[in-house]
Amino acid sequence: QVQLQESGPGLVKPSETLSLTCAVSGYSISSGYYWGWIRQPPGKGLEWIGSIYHSGSTYYNPSLKSRVTISVDTSKNQFSLKLSSVTAADTAVYYCARLVVGTAYYFDYWGQGTLVTVSS
Amino acid sequence: SSELTQDPAVSVALGQTVRITCQGDSLRSYYASWYQQKPGQAPVLVIYGKNNRPSGIPDRFSGSSSGNTASLTITGAQAEDEADYYCNSRDSSGNHHVVFGGGTKLTVL
Image (tube, rainbow over all chains, first blue to last red; front, side, top):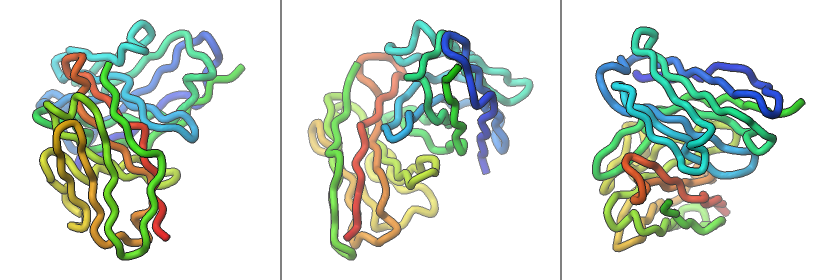
């Protein structure tokens, strides 16, 4: 069974960089698939942040592209998110998930999510 | 980027059938997928592709598509189906870009 687990600071100061890691178990990232980050501000909907292929190719939401970096570490079977220059608007639950692509694009396995609050 | 539009709220009487829709240009080229999210929980995939259910999803959930509109149908809605439902698809404006609908809150009366 594929499992994903987010980890990282729950509180980040404005203008600093948010950093999260997603540890994957039950499947080797280097075997394939895309891997993504999604966030959900309190009381609001889901927003795709970006995705990465096991080879390292990245795809970012245009609205966040200038501030986002997603990387993969196949040796640790994990991938990471960095979001720079954060503001209160970046306060959200951040999810990592596995992305399947084809005639449909869907996230089949999700982490439990981690709340990141941006506040001084 | 593309957008997917969902009705903010829908209600259904217990045991009746309800359809939740998702509209967007990208749906002319790619199938929508659907997620159920209950308060305080991560989204759960309920329908993907043309009309596929992951293991463990009841067969009262089904999906369909016509033109730029995708639908999630719950036949015989149960109290436990009360949740937020989100559609998603590929964003037609970017390679491997993903877009989500705004979500529909389903109330089971």
